[in-house]
Image (tube, rainbow, N blue to C red; front, side, top):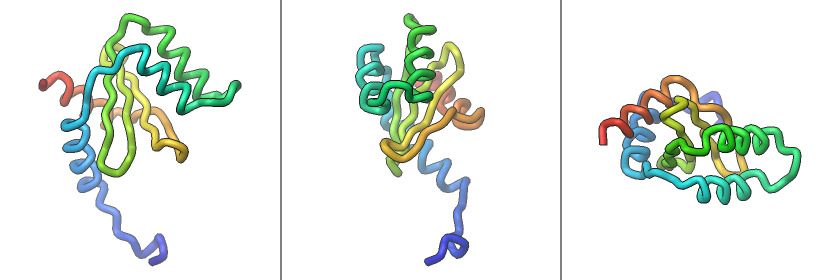
Length: 111
């Protein structure tokens, strides 16, 4: 089926991800984050890798959370800085947008 023929319901995707994130969110240690960063950014000079590790270095005492959605997308979030990234291993990544950060914040604070 051509891409144009696919109907995408963003609200359904968001709700499915919200449920998966709520079920999988956990605190992740700095050591685990660094190991994950090495897997995500194995090459020196990767711009995202530099930003990732700089963010960790800038927030050494912060609490980070990791969660995974049903479709393979993973999220890293720092509540203290209200910053996060999403990534689909070996496919893509980017900064979390305000709506996604608000959802994660709500899930984390609602525990």
